[in-house]
Length: 231
Image 1 (cartoon, helix red, strand yellow):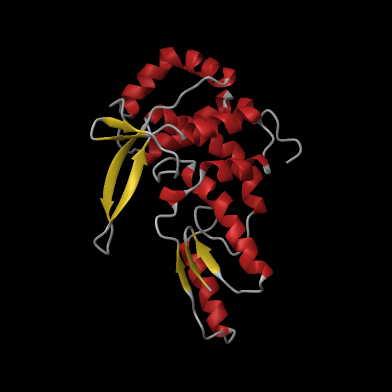
Image 2: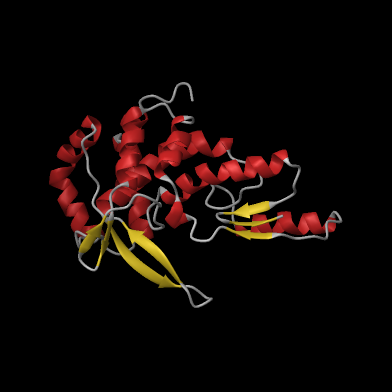
């Protein structure tokens, strides 16, 4: 955790923001609750960004609620996504770019989901290697509605153990508490980190790393991809 102060300032440098904007633009995606698409947001930021940056550094920035979208799953059920505004996607992506290099190296080698240089195929290869080594019993673990049930206080506590930057912690707490716009009504959120924002996968891995460490301590062979795990 030592030496991580000044992360918010690092996230908001011109170079980091330009890289973040490039990623957000490449990912495209729908507008958030403000109704502004990528190009409309770009025009807005030309005049408003200095003020937004100042509010961010002062610790008084309040993210917009995410827009609730339900996506059908192959099994007939639905997955809830929370679509942030383009501005909030930019800020989250900028945060991700400074946090991921610090936090990702602390994660388990058995974790393959939403990590740089890793993909689902790596989890499959790991599972195949366990079978080839002679293991015959497979336990399939799927944490039901994991993203919807993340405890904010526990998550913030785990983040504080990894990063020593009050500004970043305050901003992430603000994102967790931003609420969800559902049918024109803003619903407060006290649990969960909705899928749809750039930061959500990293935050989920921060919590799930404890599961990995517990399985490792028990000597299990396993491969985890997000909230799905085989051992």
